[in-house]
Amino acid sequence: MTNNDILKKLRVALMLRDDQIVEILELVDFRISKSELGAFFRAEDHPNYMECGDQVLRNFLNGLVIHLRGTKENPKNPNEVLAKHKAEIPKKENSKDRPEFKAAPKDSERARGDKSPSKSGSSAGKPKKKTFPKGNGKPSVVEKVVFKNGNKKKS
Image (tube, rainbow, N blue to C red; front, side):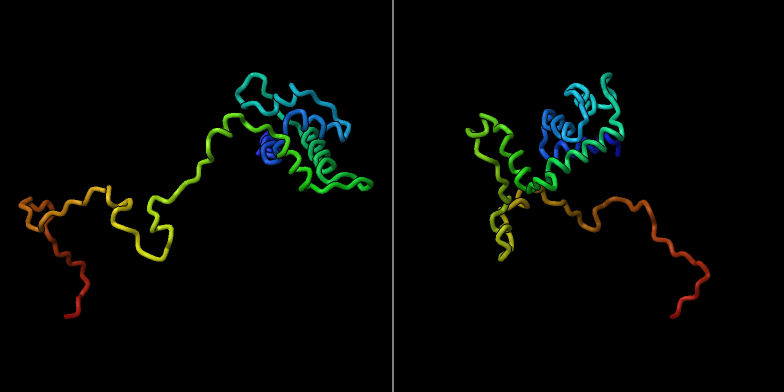
């Protein structure tokens, strides 16, 4: 895992925007522009991709500690800081119109667990396996062969 991957995963997990990451880096007196920061988050085959150095990641992690925990003189609760980040994320306008999707079980009786599922459930739509009678008229390709490997069987 590269430094770029670590930085990307932390940004997603902590719901940070680019300007917030710049502010976190400024807490430890490390100045970086948004465009330089955006180069770290690009795909590796992109022409403007830039490798995140150890110094940048180290300063980001040190700044993140100060951002979440605060200083000795002014301590913070990390849960409150993360809740504040979550509240700052703008909601999509069209998400209010659309109800949230909740997956329901295919067979309501199966979800109860107290009875066996009904026959009308998911197995009703499956085609049944064809069964052939034993003497279906096809010639046997392989004959039954008795192998004598030298082992004496008890009779």
